[in-house]
Length: 144
Image 1 (cartoon, rainbow, N blue to C red):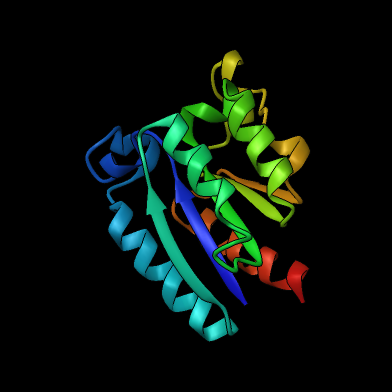
Image 2 (spheres, rainbow, N blue to C red):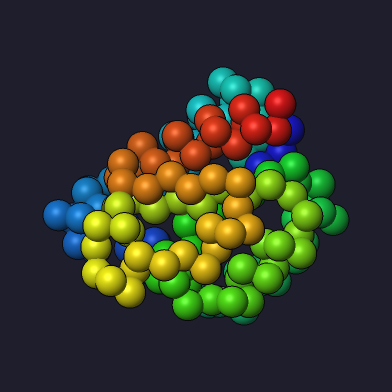
């Protein structure tokens, strides 16, 4: 089973960015944990990050041709604004799980709406870096 983890805008700043909300764990630390847990679950997890919406769309469009079975995505702020990322996930034809380190439903009003959730099989929010591992476990279980 092959899974891609996509991280969107500003997530490369984890560990430095608003540690009171996101903690001190870096994106690299999170990626290493997810890859290791994936191995334990029998899944190959690859990681990819971009701050650019179009690059994220381009990457999602390659999932099938690159042999991916599932997608984990933390689109960051694009979650609330990007119809094109939503459309790319829908067109990809593989199960996706949306991830957020904070509880988007308990934050500013504009963050309460996810444009992506309607095309994902699940959403994990609010558990800081643990959200990633929980999302991976859910997706692996879904794929089995």
